[in-house]
Amino acid sequence: MLDLTYETPKPKVIAGAKQDWELVIGMEIHAQVASRAKLFSGASTEFGQEPNSNVAFVDAAMPGMLPVINDFCVEQAVRTGLGLKAQINLFSAFDRKNYFYPDLPQGYQISQLYHPIVGEGEVLVELSPGIARLVRIERIHLEQDAGKSIHDMDPTMSFVDLNRTGVALMEIVSRPDIRGPEEAAAYVLKLRQILRYLGTCDGNMQNGNLRADVNVSVCRPGQYEKYQASQDFSHLGTRCEIKNMNSTRFIQAAIDYEARRQIAILEDGGTIIQETRLYDPDKGETRSMRSKEEAHDYRYFPCPDLLPLEIEQTWIDDIAAAMPELPDTKKARFVTDYGMTDYDAGVLTAEVENAAFFETVARGRDGKIAANWVINELFGRLNKEGLGIADTPVSAAQLGGMLDLLASGEISGKMAKGLFEILWTEGGDPAEQAAKHGMKQVTDTGAIEAAVDEVIAANPGQVEKAMANPKLAGWFVGQVLKATGGKANPATVNQLVAQKLGL
Ligand code: ADP
Ligand code: MG
Image (cartoon, rainbow, N blue to C red):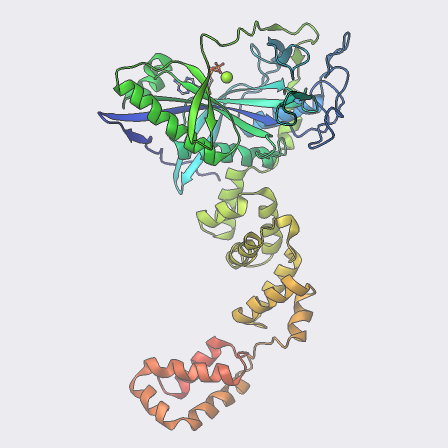
């Protein structure tokens, strides 16, 4: 059912001063697990609460407190892995990543370095119809988030909020398969879409629930193919990592800037130093945060407080059996089942709620017409008013009812637009509203015929012209529609005018 015969896009080529360069990008995406409790404590994860109100003793690293794994979070990681067609590891284990930071009371973060819960997978990133990049996933591991230091509340003091401390994150690591700024943005959006379909992460980038570390390097044409053939990283350029990006627009701008910076250094005969950089959106540039030499030695070791995580294949099978339909499959199904274009299917499946709304409208009706109305009238209007599908004043049942009136010829297309407006502002039952506002298309040929005869009889001069030049018959159609208050079925009027004028 799923047609994966996509063409692979060309990499973005950046012209340097002396020669051409290609971009190579790999991403580490931190996705907050949509769980009400933290990874190792029962404290709430609710956003925007009073600082330090969602903190269990273990989150605050009180002596003697022990972490207890939240199996709901484990399940979400497994679901995410399955959604990315990835290997699920029956054996995984937690490690301590040690570093000192004021918002990390334990002095270490519990993560999974040596044995992640999810192994290799893939994400298909469609860039334009028929053209897609297959980005390989290296791994997904579970880890704790850190707290937050607040430096801008007081001129002399910093504050620490531990509400986020210990919240479960999935770190999704890609292979360096992304080849341009637009692809990087599309990759983030595709991953976000899959996570939202799965319900494993809400994808809210503004709140930082989905954020990316973007690794960027440049190489001469041909080098990437050598890397692909051997998986030997030495064919690629040295990378820099841009930390903590939570906007696809800034991700693109940062990659663009970073590529040009690296090319300028290389063409000047210099070398790239592997380092961590930060993007400054005000200046539109990246700047060094720390170099590899200053990088932390995290002194990873297996966390002695937690047993290795061993899960059973039957449990994974149960989760797999309950997986929802994912974006690629849904989109392909919309194209075949409803006969809509690839583009329309993409629009309707962008958000799972939108797709569900459309399917309710389309059930038992013409899918193409339903798609048209949902996309052009409903989504168009929602967008204009800055509303989401959850806030739509016109329900799927109302829109469907309206389409039934249109399909049976009871109302015309023009009336339908008016009725949509009435449903939007006043609500109500479509048939009742149509009756109340006198919207009834005249399909009764007798009545239309009489109107046509009348117009013809009153305009002998026009009749003569129209008989000489059939293009002028449109004038009569317009007159009849006017005479019937726009209620006559235009197709019928057309037909009768042509017939009466002998055209
Ligand atoms: P670390 O543990 O230091 O973050 P990893 O080896 O796990 O390093 O790689 C982190 C990310 O960097 C991965 O997404 C990987 O695909 C990407 N990456 C590795 N080498 C390159 C490169 N030469 N250019 C661009 N991205 C790269
Ligand atoms: Mg990293």
